[in-house]
Length: 213
Image 1 (cartoon, rainbow, N blue to C red):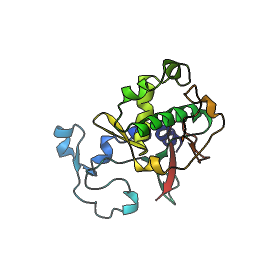
Image 2: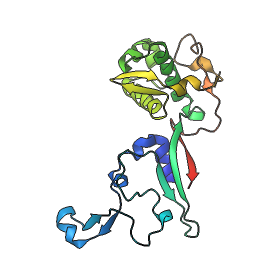
Image 3: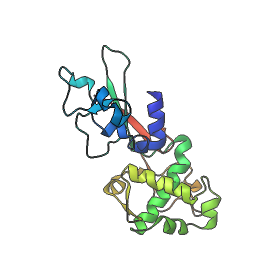
C-alpha cells in the first residue's frame, strides 16, 4: 500500500498511465510463441474457463482503448482479496505543500485573467523578484510541473500550448488562508484568490484516495 500511495502522491497518473502491461489484456503460457515474444505467451481473447471475475479486476480480457487512471494494490489476506484503487483527486494545500499550492493558485489567476495564455506568458506576468525571491522559485520547470498537476486534476486544460480554465476551477469554494502575505506578490494575496476548504491533503502536490472494490 505505502509504495503505491507514495508514488501516486508524487506523480499522479503519470506514475502508471504509461505502463503498457495494463493495456495488453490477458495472456496464457504457450511455448510455441517463444520464437516471437521471447518468453512464450499468447494473448487471450476471452476469460479462461473457470476464472473468477473478482480475481481479474483491473485485467480486462480485451485490451482497453483508453489509458487508465490511478493504480491498484491488493490486500494480502486471501480470505478477503480486497482490491484498492488509488487515484489523484486534488492539489494538496496544507503543511509543506502550502508554498507549491499558492504558486499554483497565483498562476491559475493569471489564466483566469487571460484565457489562452502560454507558460512563458504566465511567467512574464511576474516580476523578477516575484519569480526568484519567493519559495519555490518560479522557474520554467517548476511552473511546468505545477501547471501539469493542475491539468491532471482538471483545474485547467492545455490546448495547442495554451492554458484554459475548466469548470472545476470556477466552482471550487475558497477561503482566505493564514499568512496570505507570503504569496508570490509584493502586494499580498491577489484579489479573489482563496485556498480551498480542505483539511486532509498531505501529498506534496497531489493526494489520493482509496476505494474498495
